[in-house]
Image 1 (cartoon, each protein chain N blue to C red):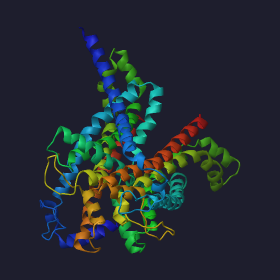
Image 2: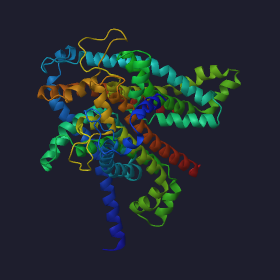
Image 3: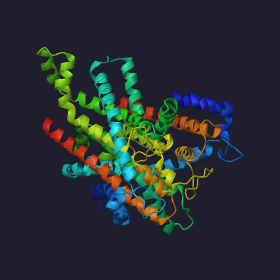
Image 4: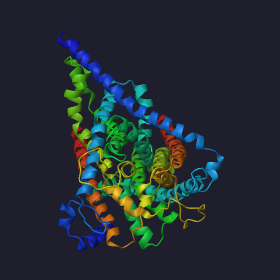
Length: 264
Length: 284
């Protein structure tokens, strides 16, 4: 792959150990440090917040739609949720910066104009349709006989959902969450617009952070010349990002495959 | 209170929690659209649609952006659709099932999950530099075509897989060759789902920003692109550029441009849902 060739050129100049352990990322300053850690921390922080938002809402929606909702309601609501997933991410970025951040500033006055919290929340809203639709499919695929057996024993729907349906659909649900995490890691525009462009080694969601994706955008939209060491950093950052999401997607795919065999 | 009543109350609580979750997404979407409409709708008029970008927010318009989006849509479609359908049919009908097919399947599924910005970096290296397209419409469309190809391939395969075997066997029994069966029976029967998949993929391409920033699309292009080799901008790029400016006027412009972009995306999605519903009815 092209990425690897360019990344190797970068790693000739900067040692891999520095890349993985240095705690500063300042390739655009005169004093250069190439430690990916701050970018990784930024990425994980926003992703973590996003999943915290998306998981409860997504699961709640999936359970309601698959176990409680009348069919007609399901049929109207599903396309609308798909619409939520179809909104371009740059639009979500605008939303985070213009609506969510001012709202958060009213509650927490110390929050800065660019912060990980607002980006994470909006990212959660963006990825929750992925979780809800994939988990709903998984819940739906659980054989009816299992559910009916539980009802026959006198369980309520709540007991059936948590003791029977969710455990049997757990691999599908896990796969959907891993996929959502990988989406969140690769998400670019929301974090570029709303989370700021300052790579700092912080876990405080109220401060600006920079993610791997936002860094790539910053370099590509600036005047960094082609072929320079600074420019080749985007290939190194890109390959780290690719490796991360590739591993997550493979795990998710593998879990899904295994689960399909179970019932067939 | 006995055990059965508490259980029933818990059950109802979960139900209401589910309803709240389901609606919360839609409420957020509604708040958001209303907010955008309040900010942007006053700015949308004929002048805004046909003006070139400008340093002054009151004079700036989205002519280059929406024409760029149409160009990209058109070029990406003619690159990605034939390739995607051909690959999908090959994988489903011709290729031998085995290790290699399995590996290909995993890879294509995986490609669909690669972050879009990675495609941008690939496009930058292959199309912009190795093939010397520069930051042109052609480089942009090739990059986006690469991005949506896996989606189209998967959609085609699913659609072809759903065609009943009896139809194919009837066609073979009448002495049709494999190609005749595919072109006269399988493709027409699966057309509506394939088209649905393509429209959804294209609507994703319309909204993409990150890969185009990486390959070097410009936010300020003072003329309408005439050939595929021209430099270009698209609506999401224009929005991104306006959002990152401090003046309030540009924020309003961004909201107005978002309305235009959302119109594109929602119309395409609506069309896809409509086609899918019609296709489902026909099968039933």
